[in-house]
Length: 430
Ligand SMILES: [Zn+2]
Image (tube, rainbow, N blue to C red; front, side, top):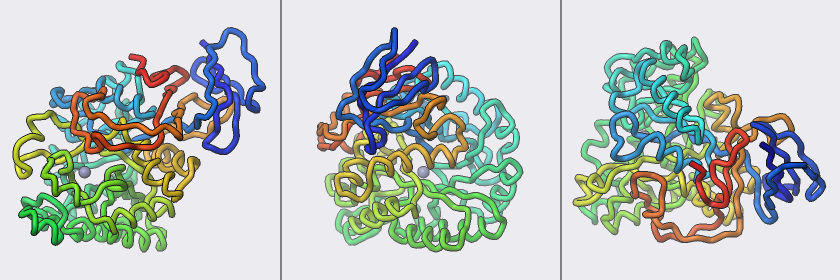
C-alpha cells in the first residue's frame, strides 16, 4: 500500500512530494519531482501538511455514558478534526482509576483504530479527592499512563496534591490539574462580572482558577515534579504561568479553542451550549490567552471535547451540564483565532497542536518531524477554505457545539494515521 502526495506545503514553508509506504514516510522530494509505481496519487496543491494533531484533553465518555459518546464515535470525530492521537479523560463510569479500566479504554481505542487513544488516569479514587488512586499500577499497565488528572474536579486538598506530585516522579508522570477552587465556585454558572449580575447567574471568579494555579506551581517547585494546567482561561493565570516559567518551574499549560475564540457575552443568549467549565471569560482574557499561546507561555491547545446528549443541555441554564464538543472544529477555530490575526503561522500551529502535546504526553510516534522513516501521522489542511459550522453535521454522538452557524477559516481535508487515510477528502474512512 503506497500513497504519493504531490505538491503539498510542508507546514506552510516549502512545497514537497511525499511517498508513504506501509506506516512510514518513505521519501520526501521537491514539489512535482517524485514518481512512484503502484501508488495512489493525491494532489495537495494549495494545501498545508502538518503532523497529525494530538489532543491532551478529550472526553470520550466510554465506559458508562455511551449515550453521549463512544470511543468509536469520538475517534471518528477526532479523525475528521485531523487528530491522530487523543488523551481520554478519566471521568468515565467507572472512573479510570485502576489498571483494569485504563487498559479497557486503551484496547477499545486500538480496536476502533482511527486514532491512538491514550487513557489519562485519575489522581484520586473515584475522583473523590480523598485518597490517591493506583497511579503506579496504571503507569505499569499496557496503557502506559503518564498523565493523571481528576479533570471535572480539582484536586483541591493541598496535601493530596503534594503527594500526587511526589508520587509520579518515580515514573516521570505529570499531574494535569483542573484548577477550580470548589468553595469559591459553589453553584457558579458563568464568569463573575458585571454581566453575571445583570443576567442573574452566580459568578465564577477568575481567582478561583488563579489561586489553585499559583498554589500548584509553588507545590511543584517545592517537590521538583511536573505539573500541567488544564484549560487556562484567565489573564491572571497567564501572569502566574509567566512567572513560573521565568523561575524554570516544570509547568506546562493548555488553552481550549473556545477560550481563544468566544467570550462571556455569548452567555447573554442563555443558550446552554455556551455553558462550560471553566466559563467563557472577558474579551481581555481572550486577548491575553492568544498572546500567551503565541509566546509559548501557554504551551498547547487542547480541545476539552465534552459531549453531552440534548437532554443534558436543554432547559434552564442553571440545570444544564457544563461542556462543549470541539474535536471537529478545533483546527479551524484555532486557525481563525491565531492565523487570520497573524499572531501565529502554520509551523506554530504544528507546535501547539501536535509537537508540544506529544512531548507532554511522551508519545513516541506523534508530533514528530515530517521526515523520511518517520511514522506517517499527518493532518492536511486547506488554509483558504471558509465554511459555516453545522452542529448537526458531526461524527460525535452529541451536538453541543458552540460554533454552530459561525463561519471559520481553513479546514482539515485529509487525515493520515499510521500510513492510512482515516479521512480522505472530508470523508472519514471507517
Ligand atoms: Zn476540566
